[in-house]
Image (cartoon, rainbow, N blue to C red):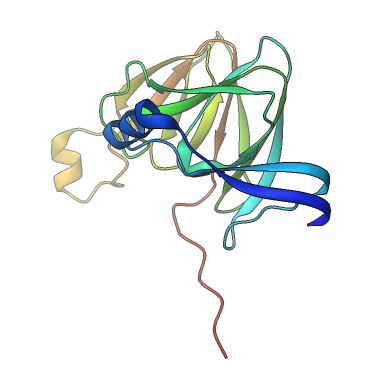
Length: 180
């Protein structure tokens, strides 16, 4: 950081704590106030910014949220049509005007989704998507194929409509730096 900044833990109140405990979504929050600049990082993850304009709404997996402008509103919501998956049954939905700092393993892929053709993504790799997209689970393999050693990607999240989806390019976790 540089400048005159103050950091304080942000309480979410009893309702916020209960909702987070039940859903498993969300992360502990901290508020940064003052004049200056702060840089954020997490382990070896790639960090990137997403700009939200008025009227934009994004649903993001809580594990991928690094920071966000106080001007943005957020709430934990059920992912419609998803059932229980590796990406979670609940996501954090952001709206308003401002920036969200996101993180993921590897350089994120932003895949456009058009009304002409749905996009299918691995539930473990999805970071977030335009909240107006329709979501549902799609089985890509038969049970017999999985038993014979299929790819292991038996269920994907199908997204339909007009928008985009952000996906991490790898399921591997970056190696921790060696201590010398």
